[in-house]
Amino acid sequence: MNTYAIWVDLRDGREDLAFSDAVQAFLGSLQSQGLLESFTLERRKFGFSPEGLGEFHIRIQTKTLDQLDQAFHEAAARSGHTEALHAEVFRRVVNFKSALYRSFPDEVRVR
Image (cartoon, rainbow, N blue to C red; front, side, top):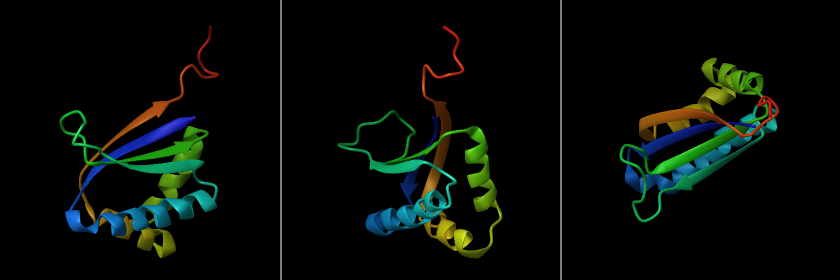
């Protein structure tokens, strides 16, 4: 499993529930199209996190990098319903950081 990890802060800290709804709508749409397996939205608790990581953490899981690439292609088209959903998330965030992880050990790792 591949995990695309995203950390962000809210542009306007008062819109946390609107942000949560926007993430659910956008990523839920990609999931319903089979472009990702699952996703979670987490909020930092008690201010604990390494310096520089945002208050919110989004984890997007895909079976393959090809599946993740297909999700990126859908979002990168910047048109139609997907773009409208993406814009509702993007306009609410600042300080975007991301990383890509894989489950370990996985079928690629030879023992």
